[in-house]
Image 1 (tube, rainbow, N blue to C red):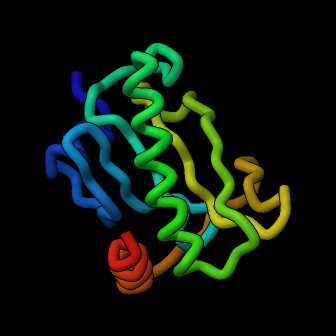
Image 2: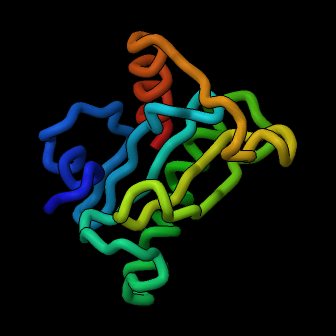
Image 3: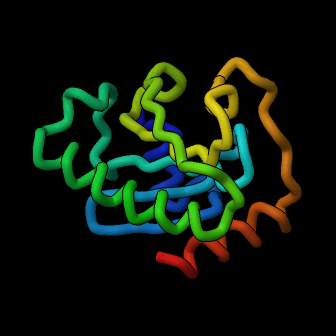
Length: 130
């Protein structure tokens, strides 16, 4: 059965798309820790990130870097933090979270809520920087 991320990649579930390549897809997290919190996923459905082939894993991080640099230009933050948790969805993914301190990337914190208009606006702004 396809994961929710595969359904998003295939367009079966709507998302706020940030970037796409032949092998990777980036979109805003719908339960963000911060404005601009983005998920980067391989299109290949693999559960555990360290089960990806070395080449794919490396390419995924290069793709994520492009997205992170764009986020950094749009969202006021000191850094874009990177986290791999891997328990929420059985599909490898990287969280890119704008942060100003280490607590900003604490996944036990309450998630933020933004209006669809705010999500679309930040997605468009980040896309424009890639």
